[in-house]
Image (cartoon, rainbow, N blue to C red; front, side):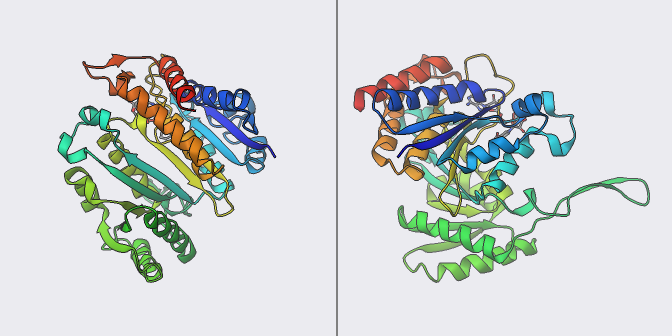
Length: 361
Ligand code: NAD
């Protein structure tokens, strides 16, 4: 039976980078005969322009009936001044919560060929392989009440709520411990339990769940220390589990350990098995339309889609091998270019990965 993948290119560099992953999908469908149907939909600014809202009902319905979603990125200066609840980023939050995607897996793996593209010393990052498990549908990005209000003295005050219920912490803890069990059996839970009550509860629940996973070593760390440790000695980490906002920030930090934010994929998973796959970066309006964006994070997100949603492990491995090959061949987009390598465009990088895939399949 065919499975449907919904493709949501979004805004900025989104369409350029998603096109490169789609080349691979089209090859796998038309030449290799994989039983996959591709659907397309609108999200973010593109949806606002066409239909007046960042997540049209049709897009959410299509997503719900798909096996997986591949997303580019949303947002850009064009939509920064419209009403907050209509902004592109709200479309992203709405699809994450509409699909119940509570677990965000963000691997930060250094391809050895890119060791000199990192701003950190090679011996600090060589061999780096971290998995950040970020809670994605709770915490301060969703907590109510929220808004900007006017106080009695006429001054305006912005406010948000950092709220976590026990079941939200329990289920993300289980994802992290399960993932660690397939890796190096170590989980570092990152919180700010010394200051924030919501993460005091976070620490308590994580500690309780850990009692069921006797093979996993659990460590707790405050987020400020975790940021420092990620730069000082990143290889001490195996799996990091943390809240929505801390995970957002720490995974951008971790991206620079690997050379570029353009290299990092992510998977967002729901309890019922549906997954959404996207690069961790945004729509990069500063380089959109220039054919210079790095498509590898999106292509690696496609690989995660095959691994986690379609359970086509061999195809996932081959896509990763193809990415590895183009890096070994010295091909680099501008963000990871060094003088001893060959500068290529977004399109050329996509074509090269496809050619490398065809060679290994
Ligand atoms: P960004 O990730 O878009 O860009 C940060 C920097 O990284 C920029 O200099 C950009 O050129 C570079 N960069 C990002 N992706 C790259 C790639 N694939 N190849 C090469 N360079 C790349 O973050 P930002 O500038 O803070 O945000 C821009 C817009 O994206 C905003 O509207 C923001 O709200 C939105 N955003 C969307 C998402 C998402 O869709 N998941 C995530 C973050 C930000």
